[in-house]
Length: 176
Image 1 (cartoon, helix red, strand yellow):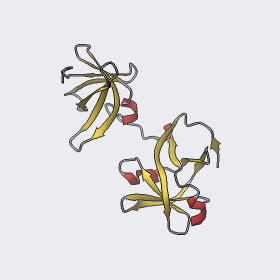
Image 2: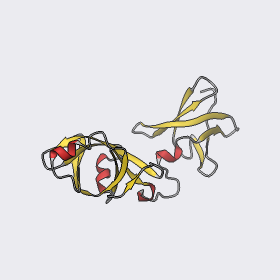
Image 3: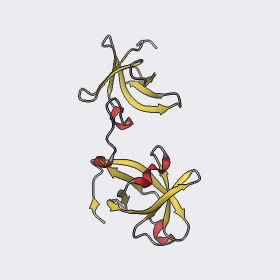
Image 4: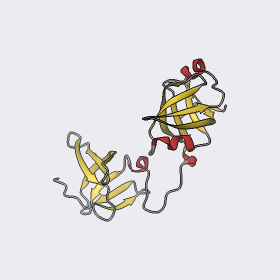
C-alpha cells in the first residue's frame, strides 16, 4: 500500500462506519450519488492511522441503506474494526470527465455569485439537492452571513458559470 501524508488532490467520497460480517468487509457511509458508485473505483485512498494509503477494493455492493466494501488485505472482522472512522477518497484524476455545462458541486462551492447587473451576492457555501433541481446556497459575509437560495438552472436563474474567473452570474433580484 502506497502512503501519502496530505489530502492535496484527493476528493473525499465517504467514511468507514462499521464492519459487515466476519471476512473483513466494512460498511461505508458513501457521499457519492448513487451511493454504490464508490465501489466502481479500482483504487481508493484510505486515511488509516493518520496516513493516506492506497487500497484496492476486492468487492463491494449496496447493502440496505449503506454500502459494503471488501478491502484487499483486510481479511477478518478484527482487522476491519481498525478502519472504523477512516475517511475514503480518490485522486482528482479518477473523476469522470464531464461534458460542457456540467459541474461537480465541489467546483461550484466557493465561487463568487453576482447578478447580471454586477451586484455581489456572496459565495456559494454549498448546494442542496431538491429533486426538481439543485439549489445554490449563497452566503453574503458582509450581511451577517445572509443566505440566498438560488436554483441552479442554467439558462434561467444561472446565466453563466465561469470557473476560470471563479464566478457565477445569476439573473436574480438582490433583495430576494
